[in-house]
Length: 160
Image (cartoon, rainbow, N blue to C red; front, side):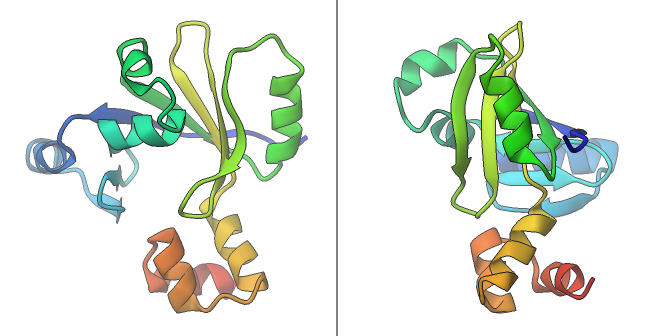
């Protein structure tokens, strides 16, 4: 099984714009990627618009009930071997939020709870998503639109 790499904590926030300004102005954090309702700060953590995060994670199922039962943090891991990790999780006695699914931006992910009800996300690296789309014949422009990643980064990934 491939190594699972911890990438960052993800903090759910009520107003992503306000939180972005706070972390940039007070702590001088640099934005690495801006996906609108999800901001990744370079060498730090990510903030995610809380209501969007909850809709994506729980697929709008019993959303009001779910929102009140969970902490506002997600621990984000990546692995190149998502199926093997999924098999290990599935065969364990763990509380699964959802099985492997492809998000609207193309990344394959699954989520589960840790013992304290924190949300754990395990996903394939976005570089692998870009390569998968490229091999499927999508143009750099279409990959950029789908993944919301800048074309320069798409080119860099494809040229490796």
